[in-house]
Length: 406
Image (tube, rainbow, N blue to C red):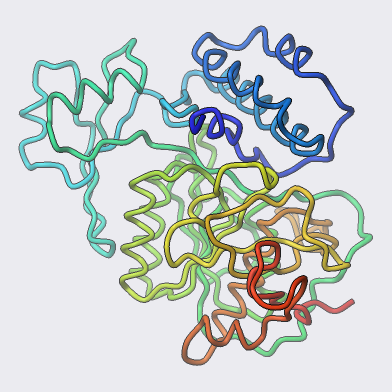
């Protein structure tokens, strides 16, 4: 059952929750996926059977995830495949954490090849990229690799996805700031971004490459008073961009630049390399803020938001209603505006935004402005909504209620 639920999460979102289309029955969806590759279909068919157990809106969101998985694997089959849990990952590559110095020698003659080993010193993590013998699925390859190097920590290089989209039109709240100047830098792990930046570096092929999502995140940070923004582009133009190893490299770079607040408006599965990267950054005193995602309340817990100590954020609209597509994490800390707001895209044009992605930079701006304990400062600012006290819809309250001018 866990694998079915993970498969329903699938892509989380290619570029966010899109408006729901007309209701389509489960059999029709199964027919529409008839051209799906065998590997994908074998994971998705049981997941489709589970759709009938969900409420209508949850069915819509789950159906959209399944369709995105299908499209992703078919369009990028040379770069992406599914891991054993039905999650997208880099094709033909496994990651070994803290590999033995003689790993390459131990794999000689097995068909596996160590393509590269790198040390992420700021995080206290080293990772070897191991190329999988041609024709092996990630599932089979992982089992064989573990047999060859017993005790090794082996994982797929899972892909994370942005959790918001830029829409046309200007019927929304302005992004001008009421907050004071924020002196501390804020790190962004996302696509590349346009706009005024302190520094930007690419961690994927073709990066840094300005895209709408990252540009909107930076625009919101600056609108909330942040002037020092460092962007780590983990997508570039790479079809397998947004992978866990690229994100780990991004964390390592930002920690080395002495950034102490990092927003990562991405969602994926609980990848072990990502978990180690998050923990390594936290040991250096970094506050990490991440969204609950846009796959609805029936989705599996979102990561990295669900990792211990990460500030998990949901989004609300102009009437302080939680976004209908908002996902969930194992814990929820805060809510912030995630719809009915404006920001600049990669071309500098003002666009409407929607998605839990866009709540993250607003909380990150307030975290960077905090004096002393970040959590204590955010808790003092948080406006209690819903039932009195912390709850599963708004966390400990709404942040940045006055960051944007109506």
